[in-house]
Image (cartoon, rainbow, N blue to C red; front, side, top):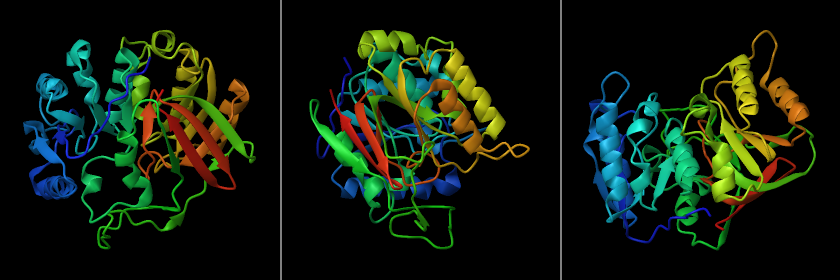
Length: 337
């Protein structure tokens, strides 16, 4: 059975950087986000890794893992939110104390999604793919982003529904700051390969495909054992997003997932909007989605609110979800069972 953490009001948030830390010139972003969390009634504890950065890492793999392990074992901390992602989180996996992780929420995306997926697969603890800390520094959050707190405050046995955003951010406009951080200018439009009303159900698993593909064939990516041990072979819905891959590299990665059995007993695949997906010799991402749908005989939904083109829905690894999309709009109903 999946173990669901629960976020209480006025609880303590731990901030640690298991991937990249924050360089000195950007410390103000973290400080603003921490102050905003405090204004919401949370206490905030920042680890040493948050404030340091050298050669794409906050510190050594062992030091990063030790700080994360301590926060996971600290009974006073109920939620861990890294400031953001990075590049080399994979280095810390061998030092994570999976046997002694307490049942508490971890929230993040990008490189952090690798840690989230590994924890859920190895322990059955639900993890939260959604906003990072620095994007919570605004005076308020847009409706989509703001749902993170409601989702993490859902009790086991209950359900929560989220809706696709109205608009998304095409690009960062640092010269045009907004009270909610993002510049939401483009009309959101969830699409399907079939161009028809689509509904899928299953257990959610996913993350940033750039990084999660690298645990295929390792002890941290044993999807088959997870299925048998924690979800009784229920079907899986994969939610994936591409940060930097060309379409050909995305295709190779998806084929690797298929050959490794990650898409066995899958009920559907969702792809987030992407700043990448660069075509290669007229080979487009729509071609990739269409080919995958035909090969697997599965529905594919794309341009969803997930990943590096905000805002994003809070998806819970391990939760049972009903996903429905029609006329460009989507709903995500997650059951904590």
